[in-house]
Amino acid sequence: MLQYEKLRGEYPLFQYKEYKIEETEDNILVTYYFEIPGLSSFAPTWKFPKAGHRLENLKQNGTFLELIFSLGMVELVSYWKITCSKRVEVLAGAFSKEQMIWWKNLYFHGLGEFFYTNGIELDKEEFMELFSLGKETQYSKQPLESPKGCLVPVGGGKDSAVSLELLKKAGEPCTCYIINPRGATLNTVSAYGYQEKDAYTVKRTLDKNMLELNKQGFLNGHTPFSALVAFSSTIAAYLMNIKYIVLSNEASANESTVLGSSVNHQYSKSFAFEKDFHEYEAEYVKSGTYYFSLLRPLSEFQIGRFFATCTAYHDIFRSCNAGSKEDKWCAHCSKCLFVFLILSPFISHERLCDIFGRDMLEDEDMIPVMEQLIGIVEEKPFECVGSREEVNTAIAMTIWTMEKEGKKLPRLLAHYKETPFYKEYKEKENPYLTYYDNENLLPEQFARLVRANCLD
Image 1 (cartoon, rainbow, N blue to C red):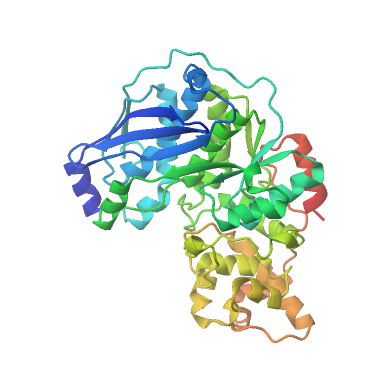
Image 2 (cartoon, rainbow, N blue to C red):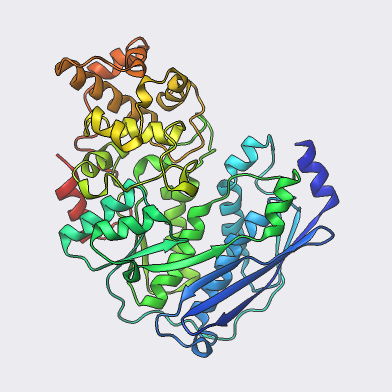
């Protein structure tokens, strides 16, 4: 908190100065220009395949320009958090008072983990003064007239694989959307049955000045990455003339990471953000696309059960942040343990050990992590993990299955039997066999698809 106040005093101003759009033969290159006067300037970039468009036409398209400007509004928060400057001036475009409130709400909740882990206590109204000092675009909005198909953001984990396989069952035409491709994302496209060239792939770069300031000890932490996915995937869908942007965020993303608080590592994956974005896009962007999460009605438990049938992905899916650069499971972190546990009722213990490269459930060092996941500790790991109830349900079910088969329990499961949770969840009826969260934005044809394939 002392550093936060010190930096805000030394660097009271942050500016979103402008953006520039250029083109190459195949791509549209967008550069954003941010500055903390007296400290540093920043110029991150995004590169989008042109999909047959001409830049001279896009520069006269109010919808496209609003999308590019809005992506910069999300991008800026990664650089603003370096000093948390009190005053933020936006010179690259214009927004109304209602839009200003929307953006501040995204920043405040999307940075909840950042504030919490840095010990920063602040007021939602006072943490930032946001000023619209730019000009409104003179060009009219141009919604898509007859968009078709689905754009599915692919991160390389089990969730997007489940969405793709569900849509395949329904015969829905899909395009995979990837930011900064790596082994797991490209392998997912391949397992789905497409070639790399069939995916719509964009490149995002971070400014090196930010990375250097992070090394020097300026403020750093989690930002709402899924909000970048929302706006950038809408740009992609707009350029590709695609109707539906199909996310793979589940109901448990709504659960707070810190019990009894609003701090949520997954805020921009929550239904609150999904609904807010959906309404903001319809009111101010008007692209003609439709943004929703196909898996929103489901629990991680149900997703794990369906993923167990998607065997083509079992050897190639990855969702471990620690091992992402090497495209592997580290098999030592909370995300790896969560995925291992949530799949354990549906995939054999031996097969999971093969997938992850070792038996995490025999590692006593993982006991504290398990206790975070099941709720003995009030603070869940700051990772994209399921709800406490889902993890407890999966563990109790795994113990029952292994004991029924006469198998010796691994150390973590034996330890779990000694906790009060075991008796509670052993005797508790499984709530996820017919679970369906009605707080969702699924069009009816997609709701029928989910109910037919994921509920008992």
